[in-house]
Image (cartoon, rainbow, N blue to C red; front, top):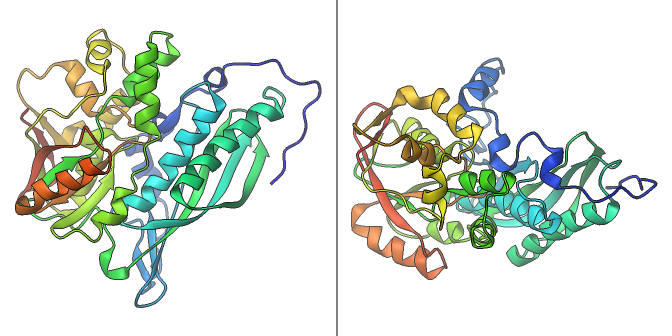
Length: 355
C-alpha cells in the first residue's frame, strides 16, 4: 500500500468539504441497490457458503470446518467529520461491526484507502490510517495490508475478517415470532453529522457523535453464545426501519416498533428544528410502502426512524423470557442507551410504528 507524496504540501482543508456525502449516508438507497442486484446472475450452489446475498445480511460466512466459519465483509465511506483521526476511527469501527453482527470475533483487517493526494497532505492521510489502526488494535486485530488509490473524494474503510462457530452464526433471517427487539445504541448520528456540516453542532453534540460511532459492537460475539438470542443485524445506512424491515423479510415476519427508540443527546432539538440528512428521505422513498406509521406521527420522528446511522448499534431479536438478561448483558458492556423497542410478529414482512 503506497501513496504518492504530493508537492507542494496542500493547505489544510475540511475533510467533509471534499465529499458529496459522508459516513453511512453515502450508501446507495435501498431501492437503487435492489435494482442493481437484480442484474447479477444467480450464484452457483456452494455448500460451504452459510450466508451469502440472499437476505441482505451484514457479511458473508464460509464454513471452514466443523468448528470454524470465516466471516468476511468490507465497508468504506467518505468523511463524516473533519478530524482525520476521528474519521479513521469511525470508519474502522463501522467496518468491524459487520463481523460482530454475525456473532463473529475479528481476526484480521485490510485497509481500503482512496485519497485526493493533491488536496490532502500525507500527514492528514496518515492520521486517518492511524485512527483506523487504533480501533483495530483495541479490537485485538492487525491491519495487515490493504490497497490505496488517488481518488477525487477521500474514502477510507476496511476489509474485515473474523471467525465464528458454524452453529452459532447470527443472521438477520432467523428471528422468531414473539421475539423482543432490542436496540443497543441511541439514534441520531445522521442528524448530528448534518448539524456538524452546517456548523450547528455544539461541542457536547460532537462528543456524543464520536462516542457513539467509535464504540465497538464487540458484544455481538457474546450474543452468539447467549441463550435466547435468535437474530442480529446492525443498524447503519438504511436507518432503524430499513434494517428492521430486512430482518422481517429474511425471517418472513412483521415487526412492531412499540417504544420510542432512545436518541443521542441534542438530537431531538436539532430534528425539531428541521436538521436531517438527504439519505433519510431517500430511505423513506425506498421502503416507506412497507411501513405503517401511527396516525399523527410527526415528520421529524419519522426522519429519525429512517436516519442513517454511521457505525450504529445492533438490533437484537431474542426470546421474551431472555430479554431482560440480554439487556443486562449489553448494558454491562457499556451500551447505556440499550432498550427494547418492539416485537416481531406473524404476518407479511412490514414494520408498524405504534409508539
